[in-house]
Amino acid sequence: MPRRTIAPLPEANEALRILGSQIRQARHGRRWTAADLAARLGVSQPTVLALEAGAPGTAIGTVLNAAVLTGVPLFGTEDRAELARMRRRGEERLALIGSRVRPEKVDEDYDF
Image (cartoon, rainbow, N blue to C red; front, side, top):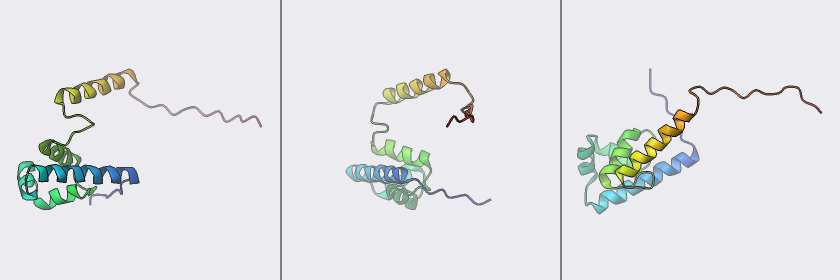
């Protein structure tokens, strides 16, 4: 079955382009070529160029790895310990909610 392409929403598209641009700027700051970053990531040079252009088809893991390797902060922090704290806080919040979402009951008895 062929892979289905989903067009990103405008906000997601902007975020992809911003992150790609940040990665490209950071790569240039390290004086790495696209081929250098590709070798470090274990991907092809066209993949690096695509992620830097904000292509939505690039695997999110590849994009995040590129950000880490080039020093682009993720979620507003460069501190690994802070990222771990953020993850734990999210897990704690998830533990407080139920495992299933139940649809809200709609009162169909309208009183006009």
